[in-house]
Image (cartoon, rainbow, N blue to C red; front, side, top):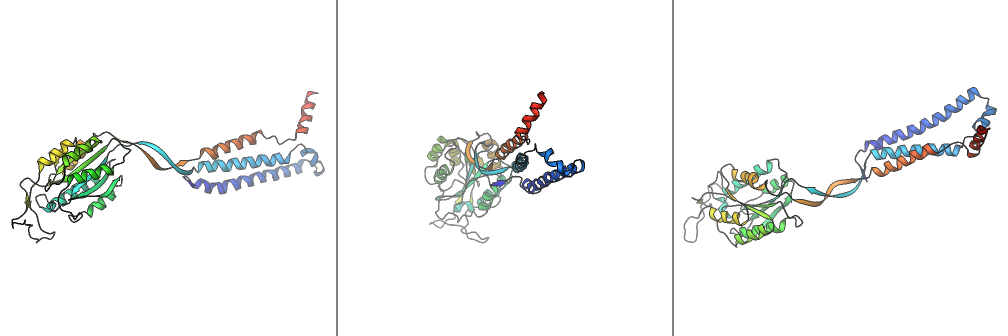
Length: 343
């Protein structure tokens, strides 16, 4: 049991004893006033109509009602409540290519660094959307499930390197299939997958996977990273690393495969955009692609605790009303008074 306004409980520790002391002071004051106007030998005759047990009951009911009223003001909380929430945003999974070709430097920096910078700018923008993160090369890995905590996504994004996935290649189909399994199954709308890749060294049938995902309500958007002219792929990550060469001793040049990424976006009922020097392609997809998507309705267990203030409030009203109905006069004395009034 918790209390939303705990200060009212602290106030009850002062107010209830103070009310009890005030009642006791009133009793003593009445006795002193009676001593001033009536001789002590006549006290019993004057107060014989008073039922002291009922008078004590009235005081107890009043104090109990006051205490419960203060508990109600403290707003007791217990248990979680389930609520049907209409969310303003969508569930977005960003899948980023971490294959060796993403180290080519035909973007403002290398391709992977440019993609990470663009994602960071997107996450820094105020947004009701929930985000998840997938890295993929020859296989796919879910780094962050869909979450409202954009900071958690950014922290995981900072750790992404081309060594995150050991299997070489670019398996977009694996990333799409993993994304399908990563969404909330109860949610039928408001789901999007953003694939960021150079489209090189493709494996699997990504177009078929995109069509299957679109049939399950997942919109797929693609971001092209790099240029069609291409760039040489470094062998390592240092500034003086040699260029990667194939088995024939020729330098490996990686080129952006826009045609494949466009086909993939069309199959996924989305659209393609080049990343651009400042990451404008990702922002464009967010504004023109994600925002118009249908919003999802989700049954979830809210973090808000259930309020129970109405229970002590109801009992407090009952006690205070009962206190008003209690007659502190003895019944037989009241009968005599009524009979005398008829004479």
